Length: 243
Ligand SMILES: C[S@@+](CC[C@H](N)C(=O)[O-])C[C@H]1O[C@@H](n2cnc3c(N)ncnc32)[C@H](O)[C@@H]1O
Image 1 (cartoon, rainbow, N blue to C red):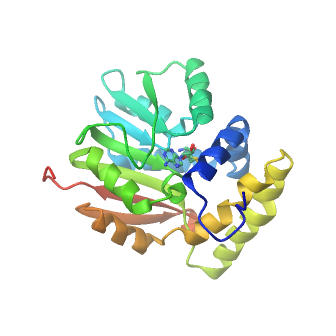
Image 2 (cartoon, rainbow, N blue to C red):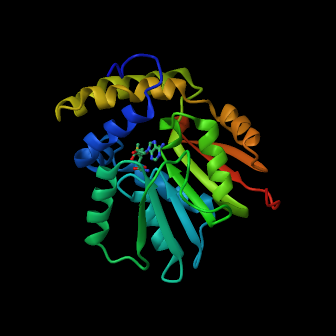
């Protein structure tokens, strides 16, 4: 499959990776982030502006962390949709919420972030966690996010980020290559996790993400580096115009 190559993997490669890692994805995430990914996901939900009674979408929902947080946020009068193209990740998400008591049910939808299966102006808030970096076409992904937001609504997009500080950048590189890949290798998933470091290299910096969001038509776009710049949240708002 050649995933360690500097070239961008295809959408089919990405879908295959996430189908294969679905059984261990949550466990590895929790271990490798020392549980901190939950804090960052709470921040993304807060910055999306999701509120009681809202209809919200989590794009690239994977095993459902952000959609579950959104369900708590919108309460019993709200609605939450989670969309992902990996049927294995969606199956894990469905099993997880089957064991939970949530204030509202979550609608799991198999679909492509580049052609979201929702009408224009459908959502009061949108989240995306570690999804944008994996899209085969970032520009189209942003255009689609904007299309499904209601006028004036906000999306919060959490992902890795290459830190500006050289020491932190070297730490991140060592961590991804020296800790994450060996931990995944123990589970027979070396190739699946080797692709992360080059994907972070390819991923636009915060200011570049802001420029892409502007080009996609967002009225407002701010990138917040978090965790010393190891991660970032791009917060984008649709203007009040309808097109
Ligand atoms: C790193 S996981 C993140 C999962 C979850 N959001 C989280 O933060 O734990 C990325 C997810 O994006 C999904 N994905 C990648 N490209 C996609 C696309 N074009 N359409 C739909 N889902 C996609 C993958 O299947 C995978 O579940």
